[in-house]
Image (tube, rainbow, N blue to C red; front, top):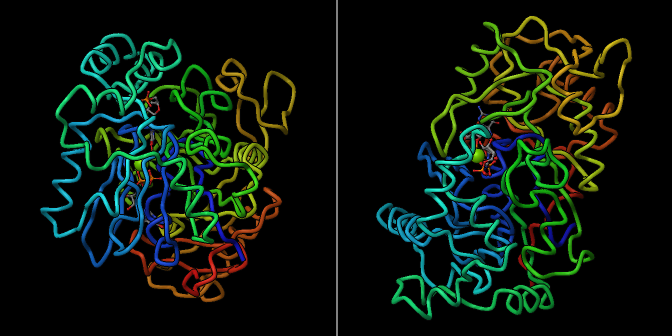
Length: 395
Ligand code: GDP
Ligand code: IMO
Ligand code: MG
């Protein structure tokens, strides 16, 4: 069974990574974020209470876990302090014992936010200063957390440590680590639909650079994919639905950005795209989320190819020109009418829902280990335990 697990978005972000991290965190010791910043919005729902996290790892609601903000992030100190305060006001314990910030993470300054708002409108960014902060980092004109706290009397001070030493030492002690991805593979700066991407590596390589660990420390890669597709902001989206079906899925799936509140663009599941994500991340197994949202549709489509001019493309491409001028080729499956949000076992799902999951598994050639049928922790069906943590506590 897996010891350390990376949780990576397979689409354009908002796949439900937060929910899955919170679910798996029960059996983990450490939850570590490795990329992005407060462009992320990770939603956890426990006993009807919703918590949206932007910077703090999604393990924070569990007692006795270590949550790490790695060197690969860009941190807005005001947002972080606000998030800590909010959690505390809701009775969640957040102290330098359970939240640690890397001294090598970079700081988002006021000017970065201003620049993001002014210059990056056409990209539909979250306007949180993420891109400009990473740009300064690459230009060697950025500010590391350690330098920031040395110069400013920041309330951040007690949370800051050398997280590289810390996480490696925890791994050496056989602690079970969850690596929490933000964004998704198609938003990755290298592997996404450039320039309509974020400015960090949301793919599995980011785990190593964003935390300072060797690749062999990642024992299992879970790819989180929604049972359909959503995208916030600009950029190509071959399976986008601009009709009533898209609106219906948006309403039922409550697809409005958890960071900016923008309506998310909706489309059918794209098997080409997810097969590509599976390859780029070496995905061992898939977590399929929001299957419940598709209940009540007569027919459900899966994209299995793109028609570009007269050619049928079977391999995904990140070439924006091709994506923008491609017609999806669909396979149609029969839907199901039943509400599945209370189902507790995979084989209790309607036959057509099971067939849908099986077909995705076949197309991606990667097994599905979890199916999620609602936002709550307990709306999670486990299909294959071998890709998950051993539930015994670590030594
Ligand atoms: P993340 O960025 O990948 O963590 O995803 P977000 O939290 O931004 O968006 C996922 C949304 O879907 C949140 O509102 C979750 O509460 C919700 N959600 C997660 N899994 C499920 C599911 O299986 N069914 C339904 N209906 N909602 C889900
Ligand atoms: P989580 O972790 C969805 C999108 C923005 C924009 C593009 C670039 O919740 O899945 P940025 O501010 O990063 O420079 O914006 O990326 N984006 C996300 N979309 N979920 C996210 O994070 C996102 N983080 C950034 O909407 O299109
Ligand atoms: Mg999100």
